[in-house]
Length: 214
Image (tube, rainbow, N blue to C red):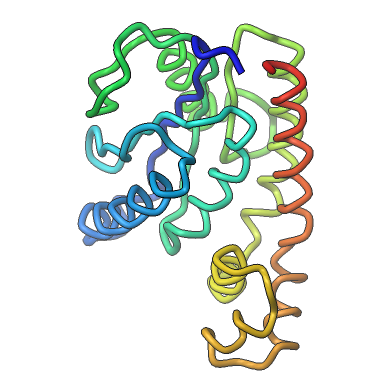
């Protein structure tokens, strides 16, 4: 993977004005996510809250972006996210805080996020958009995530809880013990929460990113 190409994630909380505690909750959850994702080498810099309910990060490996996005959506529940991802160059030395960095990848991520929020991509609502110089890639990955987000928007709180536990340890019995339910309940919530479709999206999208930019 060329070291000059980075993946920038810019996200904000949907309907944040409806929650009085959103900033405190976001800060707490992002601190935990930063610790875990830095330890797992998924990100290069800690998550940084920029303004209000918006935050940014720099991914460690482009093909791991889909897995990172799913982990964020599960880990930040009950907060729901709009996400823009830019793939391109970064102008500055890679050092924290991430919101002080500039460059093409940040501009592309910002435009992608604005497209999500303005509903400028499709006639249906999406939660995620990618931007890069590679237009055929943009068209394909954005349609894939547009369909993916149609499923994401239907996942309930209980289903997200099961997905989050299963992502932490992908086995039914440990997840059931942590949730204090039986294995069949976890299995049912994963199925009804479209976990297996989400997992396939992560795998296919990661491979597609690798083929395009590797």
